[in-house]
Structure formats: structure tokens, C-alpha cells
Amino acid sequence: MQVPKASDVLADDLRERILRGEFREGTALPPERELVTQTQMSRTTVREALRILEVQGLVRIKTGRSGGAFVQVPGEESVASSVSLMIRGRQIRLAALLETREAIEPACARLAARYRTDADLARLAHADEAIAAEEGSLTDFLRANVDWHVAVAVASHNELLTGFISALSEAIYTSTDNRGFVDAEVRRVTAQAHQSITEAIRGRDADAAFRRMTRHVHEYVQAVLEVEERTAIDVPGS
Image 1 (tube, one colour):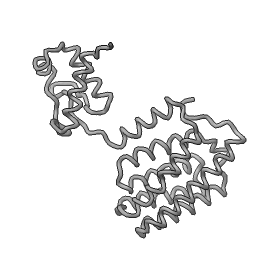
Image 2 (spheres, rainbow, N blue to C red):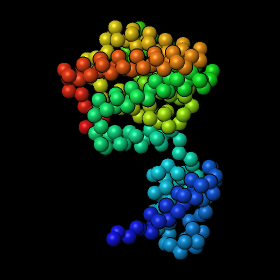
Image 3 (cartoon, rainbow, N blue to C red):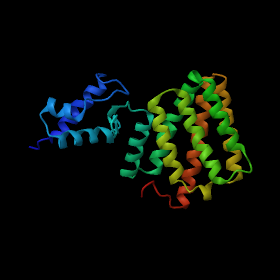
Image 4 (cartoon, rainbow, N blue to C red):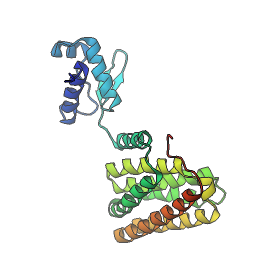
């Protein structure tokens, strides 16, 4: 039977206390010396437990006279980081990434139409403008495309969906043979589709946003899979 390390036990205890709200975001955990006294564990063990929490994104370690371990609450960045690591570590197939995107992005668009703010609309409009810029480079276009999809997720005001879409969009962007796939016609159609979805979101037409995003991502999936049949497309990290 495997016995857990003392540092893991302490990290588990502190993690549960943080997640239960015993330590509010931005506040400091008890100093190392106090934790050593409370737990009767060595300073090395306490420091290792704090490093575990730091890696998990639950504390931020500051050094110096005013330093210590300060509590932070995981956000969509943590979700995106975890999903990205899974995609790379498990070598998830491009087809699976596209299937996941096709399953959840229409829901993001529907929620965005319900909950979008003026700031969300400004972010979408900025991305639409960059996508439609004819003089922009392929890199500029692709980055604006990722920004737009993430902006739709942000407008949903659902942290889990935002984290998933952030990771998926980056992974699909990285793993697609964009130079062999994206031409002037693709850019024109993409810009048109995005603007149509943005208008549905602006008008708070949730059903139209859902339908238009469903059609857009499905057509993109079909086009990418056709390219995949002709070219070798690496999954991120492969």
C-alpha cells in the first residue's frame, strides 16, 4: 500500500480550506514558521506543499519582507492550461478537437447573444475588423480568427466554456495546415460568417446565433478534414 507523502497530505488539507473559502482570495496563508508549528512538519515539507499549491494555481508565492503564499482563485486561464496540457499530453486527434468545437461553440454563441455586454461587442467588432482587413498577413488573419472565437466564448460569461474554447482554438490553429488551406476565398467567407454571427449576438437573437455558428463551424470542420486527407497535419506537441 502506497503511503502519501507528508507534503501531499498538507497540500490537500490547505487546498480544501482554500476551496471552502476559509482563506479569501488575495489573503496570505499562515507563514511557514506558523505552519510548521501547527502541523508539526518540517519546514522542507511545508515549502514543498506550498510549491504544490503554486503549481496548481491556488497560491502565488512572493519573496521578501512582505512575502508569503497569497491565495488566488483559479479562473478560465487554469481551465485553458489544463485542457491544453491534456491535448498535448494525450496527443488528441485533430478530428476530436474539431468534433468538440462543433459540439460546444454554437452553445457559446447562444449564451453570448443572451449575456453580451457593450465591452463584449467591442471586442467582437475589433476582431471582425481585423479578419476582414484585406492587407493583413495570414498570421494576422489567423490570430484575429482565434481572438474572435475566444471573444464569443468570453461574451457567454461562462468561465468553463471560455477556458475550453481558448484551449481548443489555439490547438486547432496550431495543428491545421493553414497555408495549404486558407486562401482569399476562405478569408472572405470566414469574415462574412463571423460578421453574421456577431450581428445575431448584437441583436440578442440567441436562436440565430446558434444556427449561424452551427453552420459556420460545421463547414469549417468539413473543409479542414478535406485538407487532412491530402496532407499530414500534426497534433500540437507531436
